[in-house]
Length: 181
Length: 167
Image (cartoon, rainbow over all chains, first blue to last red; front, side, top):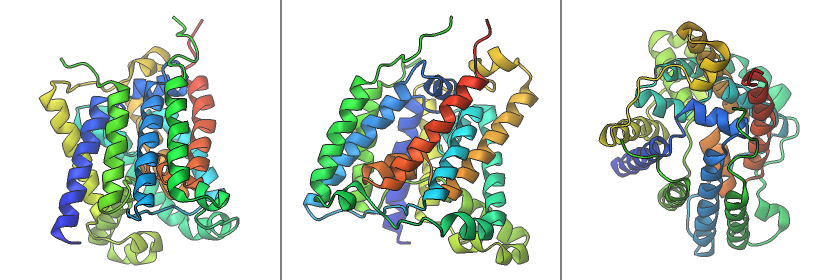
């Protein structure tokens, strides 16, 4: 790792952490309101970020630039992992990034989520050989993207997908369900 | 007290940040840094166990660019909270308190269990909110779409059940 790589990583992290803190994605109450569909502001924030980044990365692709890193689609592992993640997300109100932000801004429960996370990773490390055989190897579809599946140029698909995500972000109602009281 | 940043401004800024990160060196991810932390700790305390846990060995017991970025996330959040005077002493979310009361131990236990599940799930899936949903979907990855759908498919009913308001 070169000093420049380290410096860029630190800079990206600093800005990411500051943004998450300023939009209050680190508040478990806001996550709970998102998942109970009372206030979808954080979801709209995420969708718009994806929209802008998809369009931005689309432009990079058109220019032949960018360091992409698409994650593999092991359908069982990604699907089951997502379901387990969703239950934990609702229970704690934190994701792996926002608990760090929460701890840094003074939330004491966030420290327990970080510790739980480190324990969860250790448990996964023990489970890993079994997970590899049972969940990661079967139904491994490689690294498909909307571009490879459709056969269309990545740049154009990125711009179109970005426009779609932006439309969803703005059209999604802030309160899907009414506040109970 | 500074107001919360508008989601539209925050969304555009995060989208630009992800674009710049991909342009310079690669997408943002968080959950692998937890593996690095575990690997560093286990390798220091119990090197034999480290060698047997191939998953930790695969990720490696050395500081990575992603680990530095994650340190940056905490520093950036601390700076932003300090500069805008939005530090908090909160330990029990309002929704939790309304449903389960003000016992700190119960909330801390749930926060621990939540962290356990979130990181176990993220490592099984190969990424989290940052790597799979924000960075993954931005790169049009089908894995990101599947992960996001699964997270909300489980997260919404769980939250609706846990935090059902009392009549």
